[in-house]
Image (tube, rainbow, N blue to C red; front, side, top):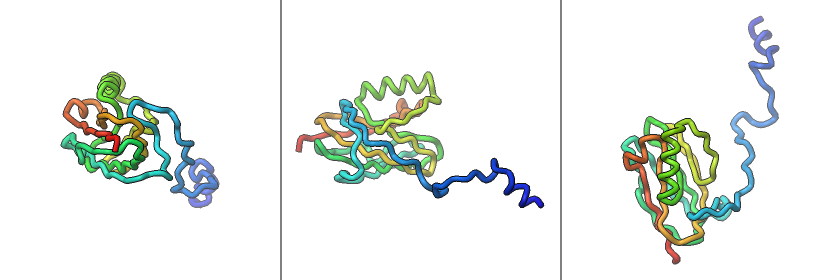
Length: 158
């Protein structure tokens, strides 16, 4: 009786043609160019870098060297017990965004240069570094950037 009542209730068992663990289809790779590069094509990754984020408010590794034109897959792991994120950008952009996050801590993000990672989870960023220079990655969760949660990426011309 209880089983038939539950199965008759469509709200309890929603029907879908997709497997339960299927992710939504990925949108096309953006061609928008930023000062620090553009979204990379996952099929053209030249190397993978694992970045760990901890509740000590640090990234590991804290610095990277990448060749201009290289497409990197960042595997971003949160080994902490609180939410962390990895956001790529110039120092000015990160500082401005960190300020916005303090005013609006619940801001929604869906940019290809950001990974918001729940405790114990892993996310990915695929990024092509198209210009030489010094760029950064930071955690812009309020208080984390100010606590020193920042890494540096040096883009070389070869």
